[in-house]
Amino acid sequence: MASRASGAGKSRFSRDEARRDSDHVSFLKHRRFRWLWIALVLSGTAVLAYALIDQEPRPNGGTWLGYTLGTIGVLLILWLSLLGVRKRHITTGAWSLKAWTSAHVYLGLSLIVIGTLHTGFQVSWNVHTLAYVLMMVVILSGIWGVIAYATLPAHLSANRREMTRIEMLDALAALDRQLDSAAQPLERAEADLVLATLTQDIFHGGAWGRLTGSYPACATARALKAIGTGDEAHARVHALLDKRREQLAQIRGYLRIKALLEIWLFLHIPATIALIAALIAHVISVFYYW
Image (tube, rainbow, N blue to C red; front, side):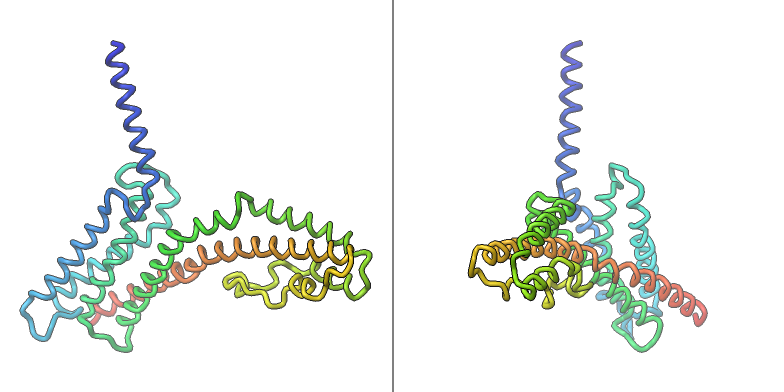
């Protein structure tokens, strides 16, 4: 009995250990790139079908192959668009969120091949080409999202230096209190420069400043340049301003990386909605004129 219990315990430990190992595997490598291989097979089959079919003119959206590829493409797009719904339901196993995300990425990339072959390389100013262009916008913005989530979190962690956003803001507030006190002995013009640094919104650069990390109107940088280190009072203010500049750089760096992680969604999601609308118009027009 003890031996069987020990064996069962080891088996359970092995399963738990394997599950923990799989949790640390990137969604891109899920199940040893299972969905990459599926996407490659799907894309390769489409290319072979298009290349080997003996038809003149070459197949386009109005041929049986075009209809087949179009149907596959539409079903894929509709299924891929459900990822946002899927994220609200946490499960494990074959259709875990990681598996779904992996499929979303690789099958989404296969749409480049399937959608292009569906068009038969024929484009013009119509709703059909609009759907194709929107599909490419969605895919390209999705590629940027994958790159961002694969590279930026490490930079975000390094920038934070084990501090939370609240802790970074608290550190800045502490510096501001010291600056307010240290600036009292300064002359009026210099004290006003310091006061301007304390009253300026640290997010004053707007969306563009947050994305680029460029703040040319930064009052802290202006005060740091104007106030020298001639005596003890000036040296203390200058040192505190330098620390404030470093703290601002950390906060702004954090916000910039967060913005780069999220900005692609402002294109990806609206473009996906527009794509589905264009697809509906595309399908309706095809069957209307069929």
